[in-house]
Image 1 (cartoon, rainbow, N blue to C red):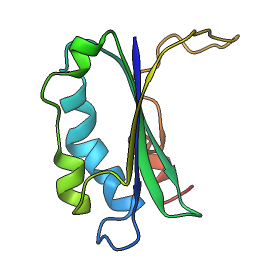
Image 2: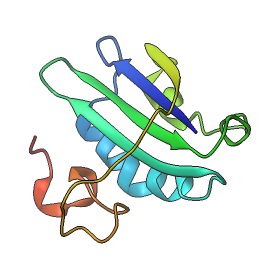
Image 3: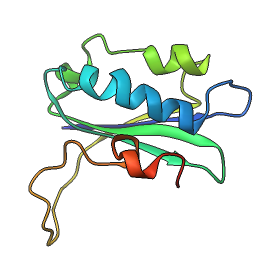
Length: 116
């Protein structure tokens, strides 16, 4: 399995964490749900440092090698400031009441609009 971390420093971009939340709601979450071999993708934000990105878990290097969406880079105006690929060493889950991970996060919660 492969893990990808893509991270943008948004300084110098007209895109903001809030505008990118709209992008997640309107198109990105659904688009990424269609990729074969994508186990999990989480989008992350750091308002204090004006950074935004994603962590992806892929079934294999072959799955990761398929053509992927570059829409975020188009909206931000440049490719990720940093993009790292790692081999997955281990996973676990803790005790939780969550049945699924899909559909979670501030971008998909209308009550958290603009709240960090």
